Image 1 (cartoon, rainbow, N blue to C red):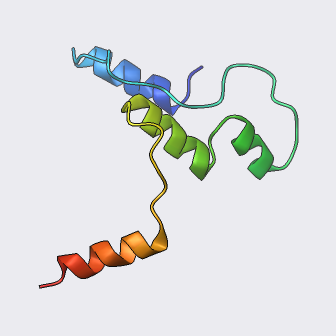
Image 2 (image 1 turned 90 degrees about the horizontal axis):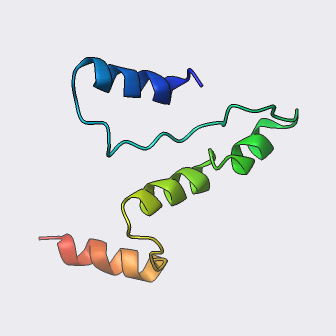
Length: 81
């Protein structure tokens, strides 16, 4: 409670903006065991993979099929003039 996400929600409310579509993603308001930051971020899905998972779940396009390196190269080649 009281983090960046809360501040954004409060700012929306103060400006009279619709915040119904906003989703807050952060550390829950509970005791967090001590440990390496990378481990803690992974637990709360605040690492890169967790943030991507959260974003994709919010946009309802999860799961996406992984794109192979060959497909990425072919896409780049097809965009060249």
